[in-house]
Length: 286
Image (cartoon, rainbow, N blue to C red; front, side, top):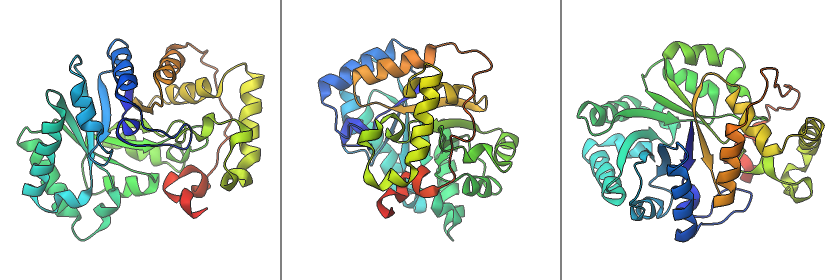
């Protein structure tokens, strides 16, 4: 199941076609999404005015997944105020899930307090599900050793397969947690033409060429390959996709609906454990 990411609704986001969408385009996107079995939107208070823009769209029944900074949960009243503020912006929409945006703080001395206050929102019936958004599989496994969550958002794509390595996946499955895939296009990097590849990624150019050649050999677009790769991962329940236009969402949805043979497989040689490639938070340091 697809979830539409809304980062571009309130700010410029991504490395490809980095732009903020106008309201007309957003309404067209949401109209199409509502007719295409999309039940959730992924948002965050940090996404500029995206939540108030979503609220202007009144003809939908989307559930909202929103993310808050961990510091918000150092004080329950502050957390409640943040939730109410988002709820006011999103009316009449339902905030279904709250995720911690920066799981790093679950390794701090305040971790137990953060988790307790997040759980209190759920126990009071103010939200249905709680979860975390992570960038590193090893940190996720360490977190799940101490805390119980309903949902986790993880980065996974053709290049970034860390989550299926080193028994991470077995440990996550044991937890019974619902897994949402994020960054399936690596913020658009996997969809870029080789000639447009930013200079800081030229050291990985051979990997991009290998991916390009594989797609050409199998008569499949890069976008279709990225989507189908995720669909082959049976541990993933939902897929968060950022979109930079209505046409982009249509292409993603069509790719999602495609049926490929059970033998569809993108070789592991088209992947990397280089964090400076697969972790966008480190790109500014390359």
